Length: 222
Ligand code: SAH
Image (tube, rainbow, N blue to C red):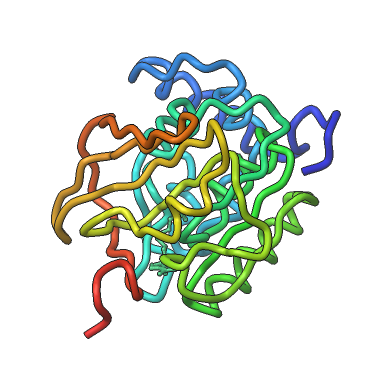
C-alpha cells in the first residue's frame, strides 16, 4: 500500500475510528495493527449488498460460500504474528483481500494464495483500488504453501485445518511464526507454530470459527 498516506479520503473515517475503538475495547493493544485498521477502507472488500455493515466487528458473506473474517480475529492474528514492516509473509485464503491489505501495511511483501479464482480476482481489484503495491496473489491449493518464494518470516492461514500442513512448516524460515486454526469444521483452536533454530514449538491463542481449508493437506474436497 502506498506509504506515507494518511488514510483514504472517503466518508467512512468515522466508522473506521469506531471499529478501532471496538478492537481496543476487546483487548487489541498493538498500535501498528490499530493504525492499519484505521487506514484500510474495509468497505471496498465486501459486496455492495453488505457495504453498510462493512465496519461492524463481524464476519460477512463475500460470495462462493466464503466469508470475510471478523475484524477482531484478523487483528488478533496480526498482533500474535508481531510484524515489524520488513517481513516476507505468506497468507493462505485471500478471500476478500482485507487481511491482505492490512498485511501490506505491516509487512515488507505479501504472497497470498486463494483456491477460488473469482475471489482472487475481486480481491486483486479491491487491493488495487486501496493502493496496495507489495502484494502477489496466486490461485492454487494453499495447503502446499507457495514454494517459489519460501522461506517466509510469517504464515497466516485464514481457513480451518484438521492439522498443520507439513509444507507450511517446511516453508517457515528461521525465527518464523505461523497462525492457523486447527480443529473440526465447526470450531477450532488458533494455533501458533514457531521455528526457533532446529525446534518447532506450538502454542494456542483462543478459539475461532473459520470456513474449511480445502486441499491436499487440509480437509478433503467432497
Ligand atoms: N482472511 C480472509 C478469509 C476468507 S475465508 C478474509 O477475511 O476475507 C477463507 C478463504 O480461504 C476462502 O476464500 C477460501 O476459498 C480459501 N481457501 C480454502 N481452502 C484453501 C486452500 N487450500 N488454498 C487457498 N485458499 C483456500
